[in-house]
Image (cartoon, rainbow, N blue to C red; front, side, top):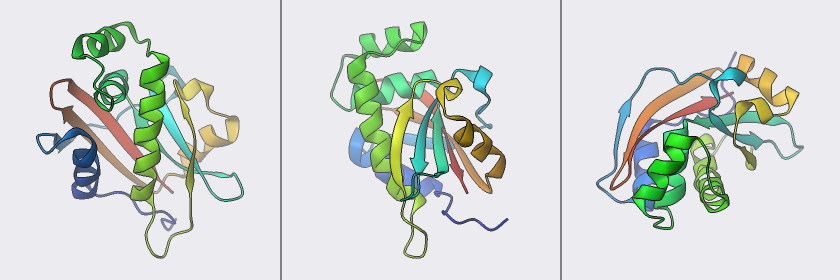
Length: 161
């Protein structure tokens, strides 16, 4: 299956996230992040102009808490508490939504169809059924460990179709 939306490259992700979190941010390739409904990982769902799910970005609770906090300088202690408990505040989820909205650009090129962030889901289990089946159609994937300065490490998986 040919990739319709490009799989982001590590250097592109680093540049995008460094604009948000500072140049001290580090990114390394990582093992595959689970994308099953049992994983309890969060997911940003991206859709085509007609609303069809086309790609996703999945993140673990650490990335969700740290990125959701670092964007607006929520204290690291609060981020660590959220990562430990698995419960993100409304502000953290809103900030994470903004980060994932910015990351939508990583799935587009001059020749790919337009897409947009539909919604940030706190858990893969919350995704609509047609989005869950989209995971079976993934043709490109990039898994990364992201170290956000002053906060900590989390994992991201970019799933391209």
